[in-house]
Image 1 (cartoon, rainbow, N blue to C red):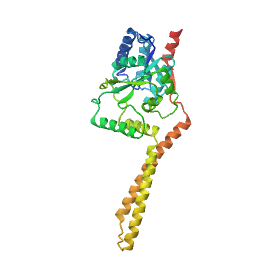
Image 2: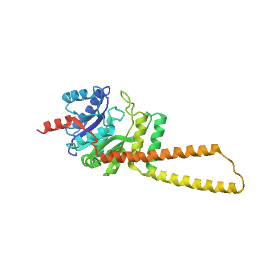
Image 3: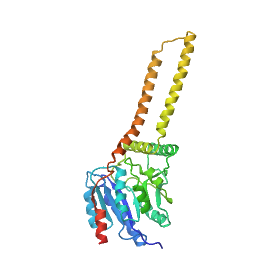
Length: 325
């Protein structure tokens, strides 16, 4: 039997007061079972990260942390987004945990997969991905767009784990390497595979959201996808160059065609064709400028080197220091 280790479960939360009691109960059950099986130590923790919630999320986390030894929390000074909250939790957990699991608060990811992840970690894997074995809970639109996104990212040369979101286990060493990546524009699904180390997968069935509303509407999903594409590949810019050369070739062909028609006396004044050409080229130019602007905007964000998150209170560290004393 391998020696028991300290596990930290990082749970980003944004207005999750409806689901928080059930999430706490389920994760406490998982940790208690792992402690009883002598796989993890009894000072393992659930680290709820309040990402600037406007409801009672933080007051509930604070209350649960006083009643439940497994529960702790990190409060961010404002909303930094899902990826920033995840990274804040991992930053705190890595200080004293041997392995860190990240999971969303909505209970769509099966908490019963965590013991399987722990087993994979004990076997020597430093990164264990939670991978969905079906998308039955998704709409046909979301299912098709998700599949298209993973295929497109693969075509761009970005290494992702298909059907794997932010439900994963990472060793302390892998987490420290992850934290060494300093970019502001976070897309952890793309960064984690770059960390390397021995990895494994645990398959699970994704459930319906237990309560509350989704924090990822279509607008945020599209922005997230755009961040993933532009953070890991310059292929779109290369495609713009190719499009530019293609339009120049078409222009040369049309110029030759016009000269030939002029020689043969077949000159027709075409207002419609001219306007269509102007609008088409104008649209192409705007699209190209916007794509380049997306990259310039990311450069602008990165060079300012602002903090990716600001912690207002860290109950996890407070509890850890007390336990060490």
